[in-house]
Amino acid sequence: MKKATRLPSSERRKQIVDAGLALCRNEGIASLRTEKIARRIGVTPGALFRHFPSKSAILEAMADTLLERLERATPGEELAGWGWIEAYVRDRVRLLQEDPDVRMLFSEGFLFALPESARRKVHDAFMRSWDALVEHAHTAQAQGHARGDLEAHELAAAVVGLVQVVLHPPLADLPEWNTPQAVWATVQDLLTARQLAER
Image 1 (spheres, helix red, strand yellow):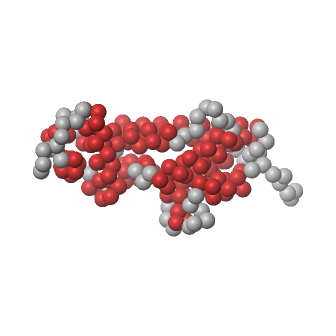
Image 2 (cartoon, rainbow, N blue to C red):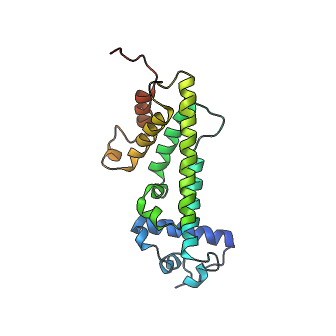
Image 3 (cartoon, rainbow, N blue to C red):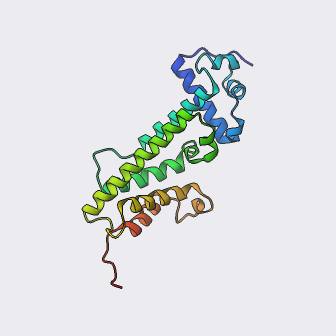
């Protein structure tokens, strides 16, 4: 093994996390071993532990990195209601298509491998996103954009389900389905307020 270049601690930590993510992406979570990470970046296994006290700490840092990426794809407070939902759908679909690492957050195997503290962070992040989606669905109903015959949490569940379909083949591979525009068009069709036919 050639001698690794000495990097600042923050850069080495990022390199370790990126190597761990690449291993999981290419070989699966079961392949994540400290010796494999070390080999990938050209350091000894012992060198990893100068930056992370354990494999669990590396996994937690990996989860933190993925959650930061997911957070960047969450609309800000400058949008509300229908506009927020549209940005959420388009940005989430785009992220899930373009960043295979973030998809791991939706994988039971990856989540099961995380230490409890990291699983709690992922759960809390998902719940914050859910609460925001329900709030904006309610606002969209009040604005007259979203249908009022369903509860806001039912509308939110439909949005989450439609966004996550892009994670599951073969639907994810259908050209008429696999774009942010196509998913948003479907969300609009299902959630838009319209006069319900009388029974």
